[in-house]
Length: 272
Picture (cartoon, rainbow, N blue to C red):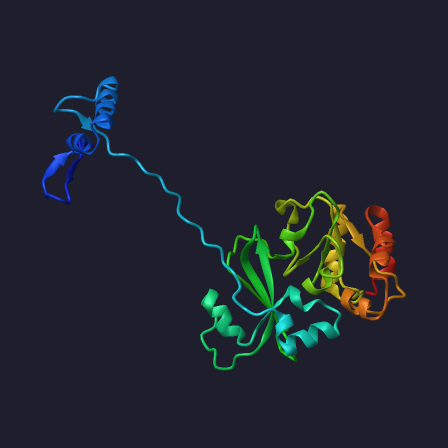
């Protein structure tokens, strides 16, 4: 706390109280000021005026992707278009490792860098992570980088209507062929914490893959709805099915099950 604040006149260099300064500036306003102080009991030489308290929230700067769209690069656009995927939905990094390090120090050695398609992960309009998808043969097809370890590792979460059934695919590319769909960019997680109450799980068509079989079994045990592909379908995922000319939406609608029916269909589908 302090007494009535002193001001210094810029013209004459003389220090004066705020009251006297206000009197010289505008006598009428000075009288109103004195009256208000008198009403509040803040008069006299011993009057102490509390310093004003200012509470400012720390600004939050949202992370963004400063990269060209995949549609602007011939290699990335050609790869995605050939797979009937809209290249405007994704980005392209000529030097993936350098791009990652600009957001999060991850790679110590960037000498052998490579181009990758960037699949952004947004949550509440903020970039929380991304996947880098290789354009050619690579030991690691997908590399996932999270900028916020507490954020959902889910693609498309900001674009869905939670009041309707939500399709949950394994890969982001597959999810682009469906309405109201998201993709898990990693292991299965508790998606209910993100406001999803009516999921329809869609796993790849790999009846001999033990990991997928375990995920399907857990999904059925939870009582969630799940798609069990017809045995006549040979393609591995939704993208391949679309390229093969299948009506994927109709196929999903007619092969969605839950409970005992899902378990029976699953037992017929798995090959292990």
